[in-house]
View (cartoon, rainbow, N blue to C red):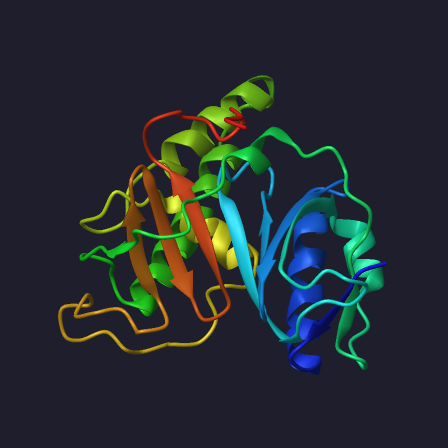
Length: 235
């Protein structure tokens, strides 16, 4: 089995936490791994959010067993989690699985440009909290006969498709980032206007049809135009 040597125990713990959160939403989750040299990117798609989550992992050195150039494979998230050894800071790469359709529609590697208009972190956290509270309130107010999956989905789409500040970023990106533990830290950096510049750890970028919210703990990418749903494979 190919062995990944992670930079330290903290990287191993963060990778395990990310995989655990993905599995919380989908016990059969798959992840796509892409690496070159000492940088590893782990892509996953938590159900219902309609976004891609990306966790960057630092490697101490390239891989063993003859693979020393690049790595690009889709594997079971559960099997990868089981292979993580936090004390040794290693992870074994499981056998490849047939990739889900989203794994063929990844964000571009380059061409990312900063996007202005992202509110400060404390404003973003408040926005997510308000959206979650609104969803709970509106669904709880439904009469029992109206509390159907279709109606819940309709309310969810209405709330999570709203955009953030002066950007095209859907609120569901923030919800996914919070659910996956990416919205930690960087509190209390807003100015008097409440939007005087998000922390350097929280940035919004665009490349083609994609938007990407980047924090110190991971990124959430969403396709806003072109092919539309992430379920459409292009490879």
